[in-house]
Length: 261
Ligand code: NAD
Image (tube, rainbow, N blue to C red; front, side, top):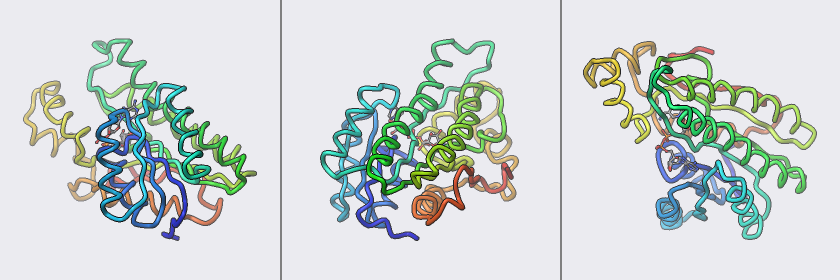
């Protein structure tokens, strides 16, 4: 199940954090990895690091909200290695703000990165997968916030809930082409995205950073623990390699029991 030899995997937002950890796990399992990220230099560096570790990797500069960049990036992958077998739509950002203070531009930017990005990369991947006829696995990076809400994260919570609908629709349309779609819903993982919001939340709530960690982020976990990069990479490996459509249209929450949906 964990053998991804000769599979072509595109991971967006893979220059950092969770995406990078998934790319490393897929490379170890033998996949050819495309690191697609808006940070062009960091994408190249991450791809070089995978190559240095014996993997096969390509860094591509891609803003997932830009239709041409997405389509051109996927066309380049097909030219180099053939059709995509696995997509992990993972690129994401966070903006912390009460609804009453949230700029419309920030609302739209958040939905664009999380939802437009998932749509554009999914469409490009599905076009290649259906034409090739080899099936495929599409993984959308949701969040515990695909199932629960928190204050000051309106566009993030909205977008992450929306990904569940997209995955279920992909599962239905993709079935006849043996394309599966699932959502991974992590709890808090200590990546740059989370490190940045600890002081922001402390300011917004008027509490210390330690209190943000204990009383906000990990409050509802069963054991007060952060989820790790390895936890998410393991689940991404499992979902990518799963052998049938018994597992499609699902969301898998990996959050130390914070959300039990
Ligand atoms: P991160 O900041 O470490 O990495 C995010 C990556 O996405 C960066 O490399 C960034 O350059 C890239 N990116 C941002 N905008 C982009 C765009 N428009 N086009 C292409 N790339 C873009 O963050 P992370 O914590 O690894 O988050 C990855 C995903 O996991 C996100 O979707 C996030 O919402 C989700 N997630 C994270 C956590 C957590 O606790 N860290 C929990 C649940 C879900």
